[in-house]
Image (cartoon, rainbow, N blue to C red; front, side, top):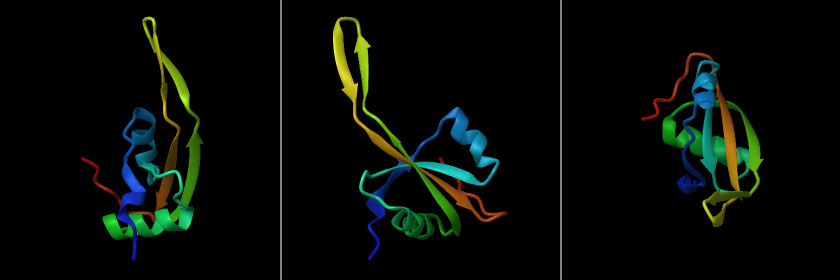
Length: 91
């Protein structure tokens, strides 16, 4: 059984939009997700065939707003490469 919650949401930025032209799509995933699990979940959710998955671990960041300091939690991004001619519609 596939845990569909491993892929949390698509990461839409200027850079990830440009990667869409190269058949690469960026998703925020759970920290314990592996490449094979991400490949299976993307296939199940979007009905496409991923060729490769690259993973980027983003460290925790400290942010400030005036005198207040806080931290952004660490995240994990997955860059999924699809077969030529396949696309994912992200809304």
